[in-house]
Image (tube, rainbow over the protein chains, first blue to last red):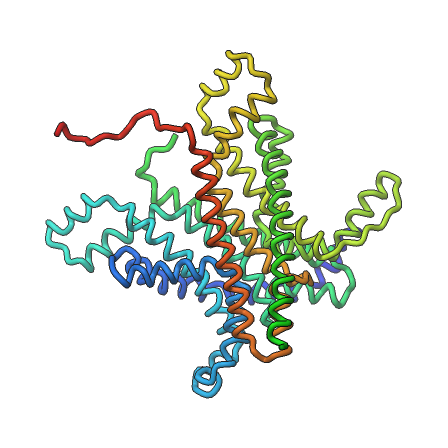
Length: 229
Length: 237
């Protein structure tokens, strides 16, 4: 078993195309996940039935593996006539849309819990001071609570983001050729499992570590007022 | 009744899922504990080995690690053994590949968790065992370990759920567990929704069971533990 540099070089275009697919899946999920998670987190902080519903949402989508959600969206939804026979089918017949929806559900469940924790950590005195100064609740949320919460949750967001990058390898189950699937395709053609899989692992490793460095820099910038030991 | 037949198969698959998850978690605990103990003191060689291991296994998706072990594992093992002059071929089953991949990946995460738990045991506890002349093995097992368990348990519970959910993903290497049977059943009956919901129910049930059991264990580890400073009312009244 040896690493074949020539094969690695030749399979690079296929692997980079897979990397592009990985990012095409990942980036919309990150944006959509945040957009969905914010109202869920706010509802969770409220009291009453809204909070219970949000808790159910978080518990369900955090408890179910992302692969199950991907299968549910990809092969389960078309079973419903409301999806199959209306305009929705133009969306859900596309594997990318299914991947976006499935992974967004998982991601938003985790993000809602992270955002809730961050918002709850904002000192109540700060919020009371802002209200006393005459800021509207909307201003307090967007100018104060969210920016402060963003600093508190940076570490948790880093963990979640790195988990999402690795979770995208599940989309090969619904026919998308991401980096993992591309490496397997090279293996199918060449009967050499070692070289393409190790190369793909190296690409993942680079992506993850570039993100880690980015988060370290963001942490240094955003939390520079904190005393470090 | 075909439906009941598939429910039975999904039950069989669920058992395989639990077996893989439990074995992988035990392997991860073993790897994590060994690395945690080895990296407690600053030793250059051990630390370089640990950093490399952690960097690789936390920077690569577990699915890719499982693919690598499944397809290339027997080649890797025989080329390592041929260095020692042995000529053996070992067939790797999807089960073995899944357990090894999940165990090695989550061992890296558990090592960090266990090490910081050991470091958070008050130093006085270590000193007290020395003063009382408790033999080192007994001190670790009877004094330190129960306290480590109390500190590490919440993180370990989360990690168990992550391992359990990742087992579903690993089915893509050809493991006959709950997801594989759910897929088979939905292909044959054309009723994917119901079977995947059944699989979701299994995972939700396992999560609920985990929280129930972990609450019990947490209470058990907390017996005899009282915070030193009791928080009373801050005002004089």
